[in-house]
Image (cartoon, rainbow, N blue to C red):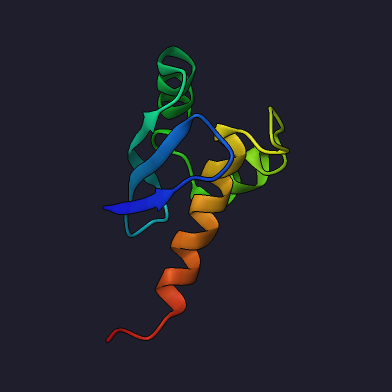
Length: 87
């Protein structure tokens, strides 16, 4: 389970899992517009994280970001966390 703390959006956190094939699962947004974010989560379920990151990056709402844009940033942070040496 990966947790990302958002910035500039009504949602506060994004939580998700990624399997060995880089497929996204169990996406949940904490806070934000429930119906819209449930829809985003359902549309992203089972999709490749690279594809999701590319499609959602740059989607703007307020504060020059959006919940979908923050998901793209969360995926980027997840990928960077894999590159970091384990302590």
